[in-house]
Amino acid sequence: MKKTSFTLVFLLISYFSFAQFAGMMRGQQAEALPEGFKPSSTNTFLALYPAVNAQTRQAVFKVVAPTANTVQVDLCNKKYDMTKDDKGVWTCMSDPQVVGFHYYAILIDGVAVMDRNTKAFFGSNWMSSGIEIPEGPEGDYYRFDKNIPHGQVRSIYYWSELNGMERHINVYVPAEYEQQSDKSYPVLYLVHGWGEDENGWANQGHMANIMDGLIASGKAVPMIVVMPSGDIQTNPELRQAQGDISQIYVQDLLPYIDQQFRTKTDKQNRAMAGLSRGGFQTCMTVSANLDKFGWMGTFSGFFVRGDNSLETAFNGLFKDPSEFKRQIRLLYISTGTEENTPKAQVVALKAKGIDNIVYSESQGTAHEWLSWRRALNEFAQLVFK
Image 1: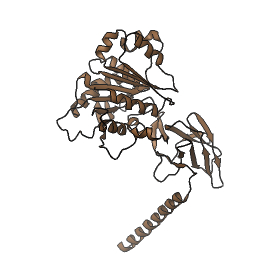
Image 2: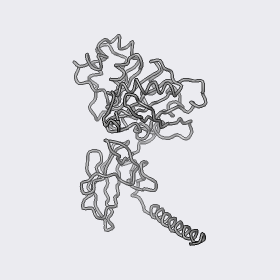
Image 3: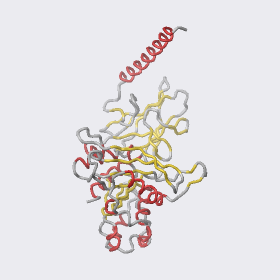
Image 4: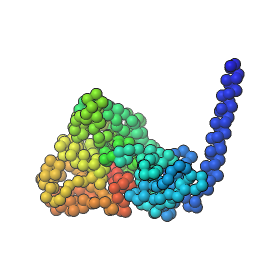
């Protein structure tokens, strides 16, 4: 076949591909959403559904599954039955939801799958669909602000001797980092929870938007934020996991960060915080390395059971109140009001004389990302001052 023939075939294919794409776009745009509903901010490109109503806090879902017998939406501990039209499109509307980010799944004949209309978020140990029920202006602190300078989130692999393999981290540097070449920065180590990964804070948590806004407004000092994995991966050659997560943090990760970034390396300029299991890992790591951390925070992650265990919890961290206050500048503890709160333990700690504690409750939220966004927004304003 001549070159001109190949060119003609390519142009015809391109034309029909473009025509199909344009037709799809017209179809998407022509479909009218229910009044008051808009596509979720977590949707994939061009996807109209799921659609959310900011006033009623409800969501509408649509799934194309013409051969399915039953389809459900599994959202916030409730399964919603979907109804099918004559084209095989299933639809349902949720009850009013708590504002913020929620994982969900589609159940097709009882099998949980992702909704192809949303971006993928790693949660509960698998790639999940996610939906954002929008807040009002009170949620602006975690939204992108085009009028302020923005830092960078860098995706990095480093070598862990203890794990015996490479490990992935995300590192946030403030907007001024490249311009202030002679300046060193304090470091916050920020850990995710069980079933999630080191990308959670950057994606579901909107960490960079929160930090950019706080730093630009002068509410937080410019800092580096390191987001490591809280899991120990299996070495593919040895077929087993190696190391202890606290030791991996301290022996492998801290030295790497101090070598690669302009950091302040004294304990008063190093903080650690985490959500859920990450809060527990924070307590275990800091209590065993009081020479390296001066600030600590737990977001839905202060796991101490009963007042009597306060004497022995976390390597005896709270046994001597005066020593605790000498070693730790601040212990920040937060929780959602709709989850099991550690308020009794906080009261007991303060009764012992440990008064350098800030306790915060996120009103109306449970064990979910909005609780933790609010916590980071508060904690970051308190550290390194």
